[in-house]
Image (cartoon, rainbow, N blue to C red; front, side, top):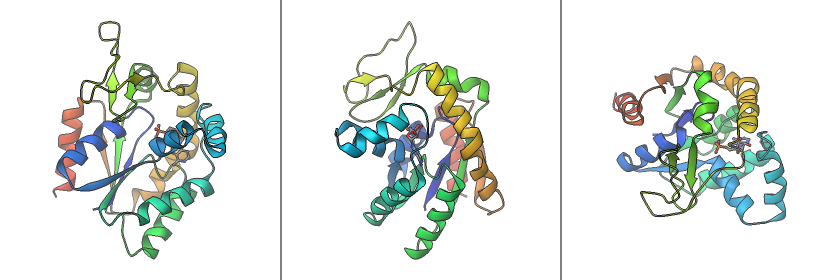
Length: 210
Ligand code: AMP
């Protein structure tokens, strides 16, 4: 099973990936997490990446494709692709890479969320530095520590209203065409992301167990 989890920023790809990992023996690749690890390392590449990511823009395709190929080759397990592909060029490169490695994308799952929900959702979340869990925060729950692992929670620099709006614009222009790319592949399915995480996961599980 090799699954692409698609959806706009804030749709719940990270949350659903974590749930999938508890149920299926899969390897999770979040390109966002890979990029954040490179930024945190303080390397010259990480600094270049930070300038792009913190503006809400996309990292160039060639770099993403090389990074991804190295990770895919490092595992024999089925993979959850979370946040990749984000452009049609990345989708084409992924197809070619999977063919070369004699592997196959089995499911493309789009977590569908009304665009009005996006900025609100993004601006009311924090991420755990340690286990990468996403936590909803509000005035009543200004969480500082991760309930799952005790790690420090932080607000991503690209999770401000301005950057969230920019990321949504980038999503509409560059990533939505990826939906069209997969729509007639026989592998594409949509789930309603405007439900509780548990209900979204139930819907995803039904798709995978068919
Ligand atoms: P995410 O954690 O998936 O929301 O990704 C955070 C940011 O990392 C995105 O807004 C982009 O700047 C960058 N990024 C993540 N995945 C990709 C990708 N496949 N292609 C280009 N940029 C990416």
